[in-house]
Length: 257
Ligand SMILES: C[S@@+](CC[C@H](N)C(=O)[O-])C[C@H]1O[C@@H](n2cnc3c(N)ncnc32)[C@H](O)[C@@H]1O
Image (cartoon, rainbow, N blue to C red; front, side, top):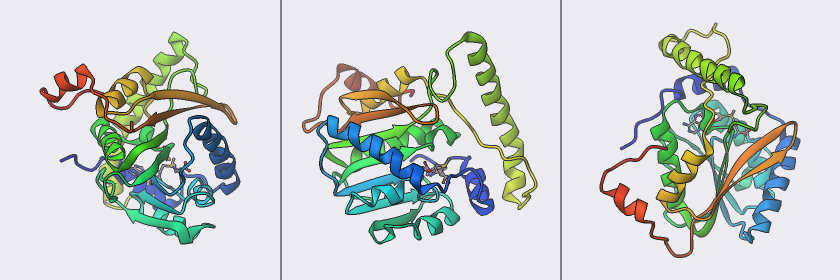
């Protein structure tokens, strides 16, 4: 059983302080319009049930509620859950306060699982992988995931060697600073600089992991809006594909992402 991510501590604290999350509903509407257009290009036209992992203040959730009949909105912060309950379209939104990467939704029931600006802030890669497996479980065959994660070449991160080296150093510095700060946050200290984990993914690794989980096809798309943003689109096939690698890896337990 996958445990909760250590980074939940800072996201609950940031929720209390109302930091680290956008309330810009107009931005969410514009983003969903772009994402929906790509989903239409893939032939995805069913907008019944949607699961959003890390809904924040409902920036995107409210836009999703313009199309979906029901949205299950998950977050680790009680304040974010309260905020998402008050956005336009809230009657269609079912908020869930969660701790572990478990999606409280039945198997094969969702048309879309979406998560934007969340998984890069999760400190434990096992939690990221668990969310991918859970998304696969709850999606109906033919359903899609849309996951925004930063990769080199997007989000202002050029692929030049020196820039990548600086990013890696920053990522490590944040990680170690949080090892020190989390116990302080847990006992109620609130006077600390705004800081959260920020992991930049390697697309090839995510692609391989999603393929092993069973998603296909899998594609990364780059959208231009206040800079270049990278999103993974992947489908749960109508009929499960059998990859030789899945068989090999299933005998050796968990795989790296
Ligand atoms: C940067 S905000 C993004 C919010 C929203 N998705 C958006 O795009 O506006 C990250 C959100 O993810 C939530 N979060 C952090 N870790 C999480 C986890 N392990 N599971 C679910 N939500 C998480 C935080 O509480 C926060 O609301």
